[in-house]
Length: 133
Image 1 (cartoon, rainbow, N blue to C red):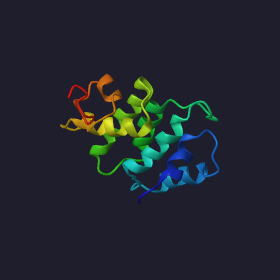
Image 2: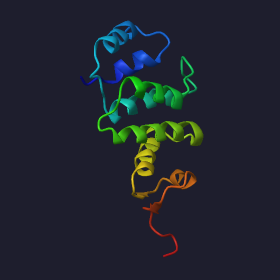
Image 3: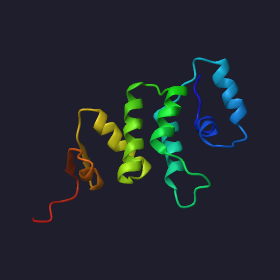
Image 4: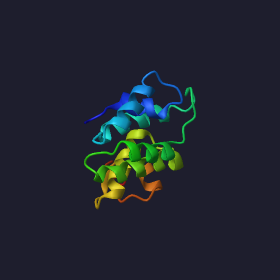
């Protein structure tokens, strides 16, 4: 059964009104799964560090969540794990981290203006016009 973001956040937060129901569902079902989109939303919640009500170690939390709620297709799990590391190590935005995670775990480069990708070593082709012309 597909679960969405409120299920994942109930598991991540120390105290959430849906936590008991989410844990009960985990105990009763073995077919729970989600998508890269639900994890993207969770990563957005991790990103706002200054106003956060709670501190969360994003890479560890994502790895733990993936053990409980896998992503379909499975190939996206590695991309999400990479993205969580990029959030933490390079302070990328959640969506830039996810794009970088997909590129890193695939066999492609990226066509983009985002220079942060150069910092993490992605094969980036600049989208911006050549200023020397």
